[in-house]
Length: 166
Image 1 (tube, rainbow, N blue to C red):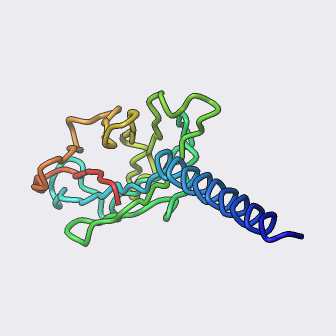
Image 2 (cartoon, rainbow, N blue to C red; image 1 turned 180 degrees about the vertical axis):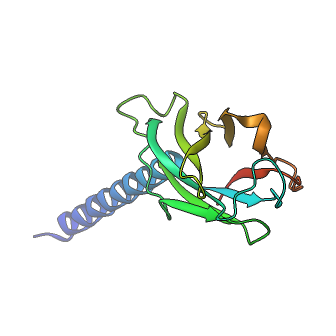
């Protein structure tokens, strides 16, 4: 093999390595673009004597209803009791490009359960619009006991919910 052939082969291998590196780099960027980790935080400020007070607190859990969500929850549910620390549900959201989920609104429903009675007393929806921050929508009984906080202030007398990206 001549010196010229060795140099050409080396140059060709360098180009192939660069192309492979670029391909893997682009795929990793795309993977990050379609997946993220988010949090729903819950604080219970319903005091004894108020209408919706629950001695055993409330459990918030994923209901199984969602669109374009492939959720892996850090906790399947969380329980929050009056004046205790907040509970946090971790959401791993990954949209599928093949089903068009990258350009559709994705969502996951959650149920709020009174631990004294075991009844579902409300529902909320975590939703993610394409190229937008996640948001919470209180879909059932929102005015009576829940509030969506966006400014970080806790409201007394209700369950407080908010969401952010990790």
